[in-house]
Amino acid sequence: METEQIIRLQPTFSHTIWGGTRLREDYGYQEPGDDIGECWGISAHPSGDDTVSGGPYDGKKLSALWAEHRELFGNAEGDRFPLLVKIIDAKADLSIQVHPDDAYAGVHENGSLGKTECWYVLDCPEDGTLVVGHNAQTKEELESMIRGGRWNDFIREIPVKKGDFIQIDPGTVHAIKGGVMVLETQQSSDITYRVYDYDRLQNGKPRQLHIEQSLDVIRVPAASPEDSVLHAAGGAAGTVTELIACPFYTVSKVIVKGPLTMAGDPHFLNMSIYEGEGSVLGTNVKKGDHLILTAAAKEITMDGAFEAIISHI
Ligand code: ZN
Image (cartoon, rainbow, N blue to C red):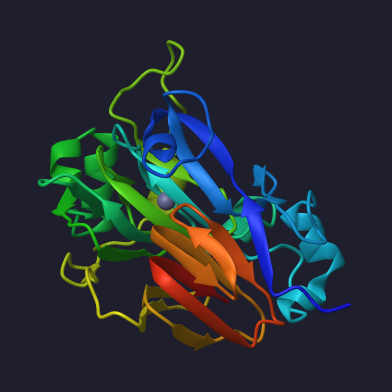
């Protein structure tokens, strides 16, 4: 049997107090509701395990594919599919949060992975911002700001534009602000420590905060705003541009206008199309599609007019 080169995935969705309708209206996902916060486009996480759509593995969960057909992933090691790719629609502000690294999560969260993540800004308002880092200069100042509820002193908002790219290392305070849509690539983990939730109520109650854990893991001082944002808008037709390479993933932006060929990965490549349409290895693709190009895809031929974010381990 010829080994499959493309795995197409059916995303899962999460509904949140800050979500909206743009994942349906702008990206075409058939998901009801007016509080759709996240599309988990490439995920084998237990909280949202995607289903293969079409081909010989139609209907299988990605977690089962990883467990039973590791050859598709170039026999990559690990007890779980390591990455998670989401599109996030923040109609309202997300809580101010921070993630632990692998070492802290391993000890304090039952052997879970920590979380390193990165954002490619798909859309944002003229005056759009993200929270990245904070203003405390010392651990003492951090503790005083957080325990004292001095949120205006603590929170550092930075202006962003469509096409900006931001790496969020563990220990980095962060929040997506209302009106911003991002494509997030992250380690497959769900460990989030909530520092502040704007005193909002959900079903009449505040959501849980994690102050002690946050104080444990927040890095002080934060990296400078200039060191936090890469302006990656635009780019030439027919290019593959690396945005970040870190120990957990490498993320690149692909701009297709006419025929383009790129090398595959010895393990696998995740691909999420966020603009336009065309073909990948002869298969039609369009905005909102999420694919895994397997180890069998040595050379990836593309055509049409589309843009995509790709990632590999
Ligand atoms: Zn996060």
